[in-house]
Amino acid sequence: MSHTWKDTVATVLAAAVVVIYVGYLWFDGIPFVEDVRGMAAVGLVLSFASRRIGGRHGFRHQRIAMAANIGSLALGFAALATENAVVLALFIASTVVLWIAATYVRTDGFHTGRLQPRTDMHVDHVRFAIPDIDTTVDASLPEPRTFADVPDRPE
Image (tube, rainbow, N blue to C red; front, side):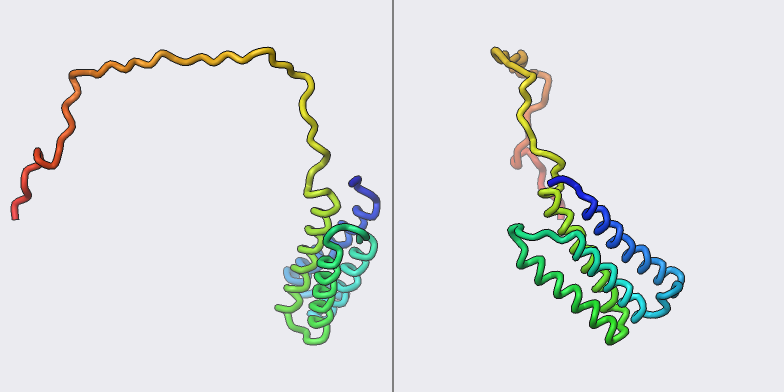
């Protein structure tokens, strides 16, 4: 599939969620995001907009994606209601995982195009070169030792 403006907007929104979350963690709160509840609200709005704008219909795993979206939004609402930092981290992680999965589906498995066979090469015949291998035995090498040649260990 080709990359559209919707893909770009969805990527920017998903990246904004991550940047704001990192800023929230790094600076212990930023304007409009003072606590877990504020970060959950911003994350819910941006991630919902990202999924709504960049979402696709009619692909093979649409039901699985819908269940994952509902689960992610449920984590967001749980973080909003409980003000639990662990639930918030799970919500942000699920947002990132869903964005990666959507990008994977959108790009047909990260392939940028179909692989085509090369037509600029033609082989008439193939020659194999077998090197000469010296199979003679060097008589100067000692004979291998056996267990009968090894002296007993003193006790």
